[in-house]
Length: 141
Image (tube, rainbow, N blue to C red; front, side, top):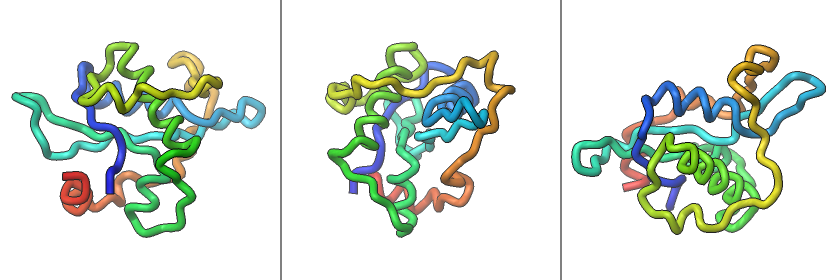
C-alpha cells in the first residue's frame, strides 16, 4: 500500500504543519477550514535529512482500517498532489519523486493566509496523534 508522497523538509516541521493546517476545504461563511493533508516522519533518511510523508487524511483513515472513499486516481489524490506541488513551489519541501506531483488539480485549492488564520476554526477530520507510527513506518517502507 503506497501512502502519501515522500518529501524532505526545507523548513522546520512546525512551519510545514502550520502551513498544511491552512490548506484544504475552506468554509468562509462559517469560518472553518478542514485541512486535507498531514506531514508524518517516516523514520527513513535521505543522506543526513529525515524523510517525511505527506498524506491525505482519507489515506490515513484507510490505514486505520476506517471507512474511506479515497481512490488512488481520484480527486483526493489529485488534491494531495496539488498541495505537495505548492509546498515544493514555495520552497518548503523537496519532493523525492517529482512524478508524484506531475498531475495536479486545475481548480482552486483552499488556502487561508497566515494573518487570517485566527478568523477560522481549524477542524481536523483525522487525529494524527492516534497514528501507530511504528505500523505506519512499516507500511510505507
